[in-house]
Length: 231
Image 1 (cartoon, rainbow, N blue to C red):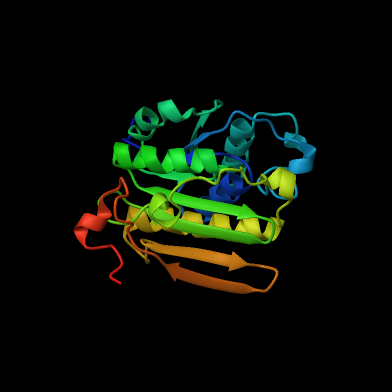
Image 2: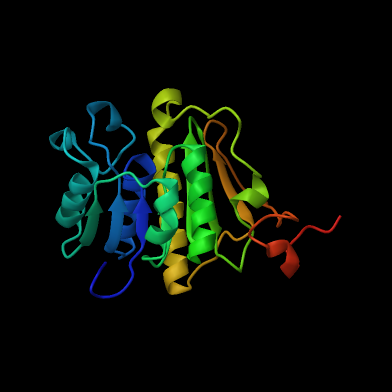
């Protein structure tokens, strides 16, 4: 934990995590923690935009911190080279001011949503596969959550970025929107994607913001605060 108080946590240092980190640097946000247990691989470089060939074989969190320091002098990146298990998420999230989830599977995304609600910290969710990506922000007590939109993870896990492929430029766009949401949460400048899902279809060049509402019976409880859709 930083001596200056809680800092944001970037969950994942892959495609979305690395793009978000770069965008945060450009926004002047240069103090955050990053958690990822993996190492940089050559096949990752087309979508994990902060790394270069000299980083191959290094722990992603350490390579990310070094790249941030080179590009944005004065950066303070707390590196955690570990995999965060669902049962440990609440305690970990509670140590941070907010969480940006750049994970690449539904199980982790839903676990992060649930843990953020229990810990009482805002969560920026992002995902991308192929040509399509999405972003939304969950603030406990103020917005619907991921389970209001998608009640549960699919019974069959969708392919990861590595398995299904992903457009590198799309990673940059989704990462930039995620960073902007973090900046808005911190600075109060801009609009939060509360009850709104930002979607992009890069194959068709279409971007939309889809409004959604609290689901009655969801554990986040927002339907009781008048955010449920009235039919």
